[in-house]
Length: 164
Image (cartoon, rainbow, N blue to C red; front, side):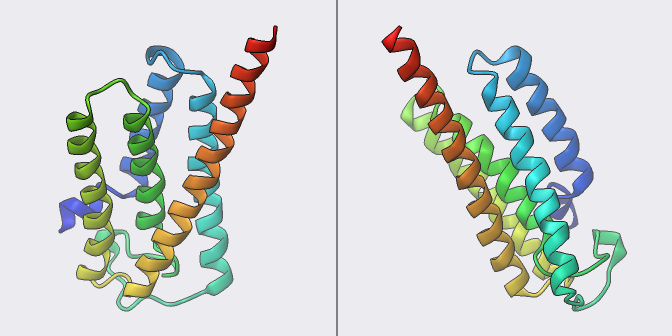
């Protein structure tokens, strides 16, 4: 579980986010706005999580610094970060030209990663189950807001280019 929880750590999510941002900006043939909205989603969830942790000030079950069990407990930062990062990857797979079978396989694995990271935090006794539920609700809500904003912006761009 230690390895699984590490896949949702600030260090790993930050490194993967920088790589994905660079790919979206320079390598992937989709709108550069996807990179911008991805950056907004990751920076935004970090700020939201930090703000809510400070506001609620909920103590952890047991502090285990070995598994990033420092600071306040609610909502789980590993969970919120994982929901947004891996959730954005799910979105990218959905809009990709891959076959339906491949999309289902990749997205199933990504959902499993999010759930395993979330549950690993309870298993390692660094969060309560409600911290995980709050983290999932916050992460997926923020992700949906960011993706909806991106899709609206892309739709307006397509609509504008059709009327010219």
